[in-house]
Image (tube, rainbow, N blue to C red; front, side, top):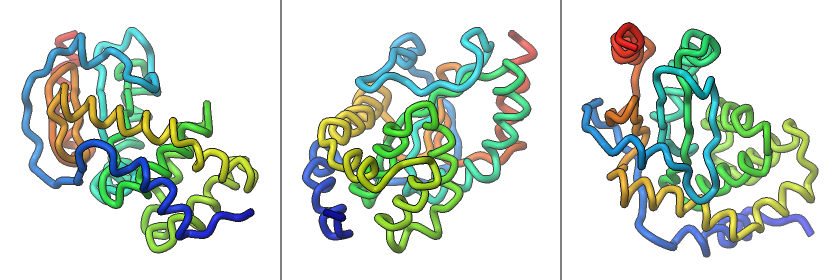
Length: 215
C-alpha cells in the first residue's frame, strides 16, 4: 500500500517528538573549543566520513536537510571544500544529522540518506540541491530523489517505516546538543573549534589555510 503524505508525516512524527526540539539558526560564525577527542568519537549510527584519515584538518558538520542556510552552504561552499581540500587529502569531513523543523521531514530525509548506504553523500547532495522543489511536498519530492538513487517504492517505504533508525538519528542530534552544545544549524567544528552559521568559500578558506600552513 502506498503511503499518503499524511501517514508519511504522522508516522515519523511519532518518533520526532522524542527529546529536545531543534531549530535552525543564522548566527555569525564564532569560535569556541570543545574536547576534540570526545567530538571525534562516533555516535550511535557511526560516522559518515569523506576524505583521508590522516588529513591535517577535520571538520565535523552538524546540519539539517530542512535548513535553508545548510542548503546554501552545500550548494555554494561545499563544492570548493570538496575539490580543493577533501579530494586533495587536506581535510576530512564528518557529517552529523541534526534535524530542525519540521523535524519529521528532516528525519525522513536523513533516513533515506542512511538507507542509501555508500550513496549517503550523493543522496544528501541531491536533497540539499533540490530543497526548494521538495519543500512543498516532501513525500513526493523525496520519492523522486530516492528513485533516482535506485530505490524502489517498496524500499523507500520500508526505509521510512524504520522507527529504530529514526530514533537513532535523533540520538545523534541529542548527543550534539547535550555534549557539544550544538543549538542551531549549520554548526561546524574545525579541529575542535566551533563555528556557528553558514560560510562562504572565502570565509572557509580563511579558516583552513592557517591550519594547513601550521600542520
